[in-house]
Length: 207
Image 1: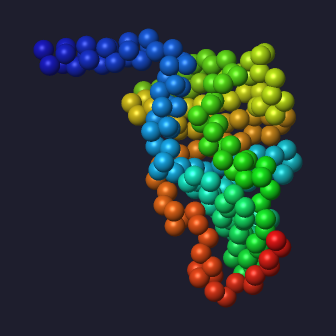
Image 2 (image 1 turned 90 degrees about the vertical axis):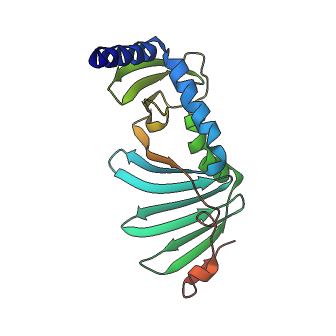
C-alpha cells in the first residue's frame, strides 16, 4: 500500500509539472529572484569569443556594487565597481588602477542580473527537455523584439522544486555568454573596495 501511494504521489508531482506552461515556470524563477534581490547575487560568467577562446569571471553583485575576479592575459585581477569608480588590482604586478566609471558601464554591470529577471521579455519560450531535477528551456527572439543588441537565442536551465536559475546562456553574432553557479547572499564588505587591504600596492589613479 505504501509503495502504491508513493507511486501516486510521484505521478501527481509529474503531472503537476507537466501541466505548467514554460512561461509559468520561468515566471516562478523570476519570483524567486525578486524574493532574494536584496541579498545580492553570486555567479560565474563564461564569455566565449571567436578565435580568442573562453574567459571566466567570478562575480558578486549587491545593489549598485560589483566585485569581479578574472584572469586577463594570464594575470589575475580583482575589480570593485560602484556607480562612479572602479578599482582594479592585479596581483602579479601589485598594481592598483583607479578609474572613473562611465554611466553606461555601470549600467552594464547590473544588466547581467536583469537577464534573469526579464528573460522572457521579447522572447518565445519552449521547453526543450527536462530531467528529474531540471527544466531546459530555449528562448528565441520574437519578431516583435526590435532591440538590436538582444541575443538571438537564450538557453535557460531551472531547478525543479526551488525554481532557482541553474544556468543561462545567451548567444549573439558568434559570441556566447554563460551564467552559472548562481547563488544568493553577498555582504557589503565583499563588494566594497578597502584600500587598507592593499597597503603596499602601486597606485595608478587615472581619474
